[in-house]
Image (cartoon, rainbow, N blue to C red; front, side, top):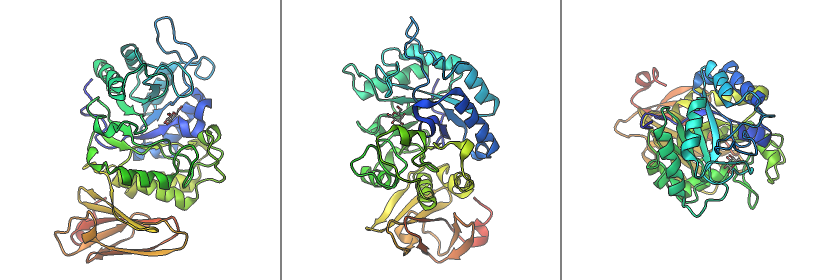
Length: 397
Ligand code: GAL
């Protein structure tokens, strides 16, 4: 079906990879669906429950169709989709635009129609489509285009998540092949920075997004995807155990906050990657911060961009329907005073006074344009700034 109505705001949900890696089972996915309901995450907008790699059996059937792994997913994918739908959520699945998935399971290249039909029959609402396996000499636009066409031909709305790691600039063609989101970097890992290891840390991804300078590619229905959330994760999470990266400790509370704040400021897809059956209260409070989620889901759909980058102090902002979000990031190891005037940011500067909302505390005040905060090491102050006086803006967001 035509995807024009899909993902008008960045998709939100949960994906199995960062939490469970290749050990995922249908019980884990059901538990995640239940947890999205019980924790209140569904009610703030997290709606897709996506099973990543390793759900399939080692062999296809004789017609080349994918089969669920009989041990890990004994009830089958249609039953799992029903379970997810019964909880008011949507169901997502994974395959790859190659002969095999990244973990060596059968994948979709050359069988796009058949698999799209299977997915539609099962009740799939979202497809994450990876870039592993033999490409048989076909370039990314050709391979991802074939699946986009197959998804358009089935009688079901399926969000198409292109996971090509930003290798051949998917922001330039992702929308044209029917994609609603496209990964722009390598995999995120649960670490602040990584160096030469596998994957990118949280600060590395923000740097990469700044370098790429691809904000113009993003608009409702088509999203730059800096990868799934590692909020709440550390050495014990599935992906951390699976990948070769050395992860010594969990992301700290302040690192989690900066990570989530930046994904919201970027207007990124928000795919939770932690085990929600075991998440700490501060992690759940962060993921359900209504002020930040509102910035992520702003209807203009713009990507935040840097206004000022210094070695330890950065200012980023994102234009919103009624103003802008402004983030003051302290990259250093000591508390820092960071100040900026709205003139230097994306805040529309028609008026002479601004209502300011602190997205962490919910406090509101009025400013003549100056914004400042003492920011803890690795922390980020986030303000929602609305032209006009405080009383005019206090009823919104
Ligand atoms: C990677 C992908 C990850 C995850 C993994 C599964 O290519 O970027 O997000 O899906 O494969 O094997």
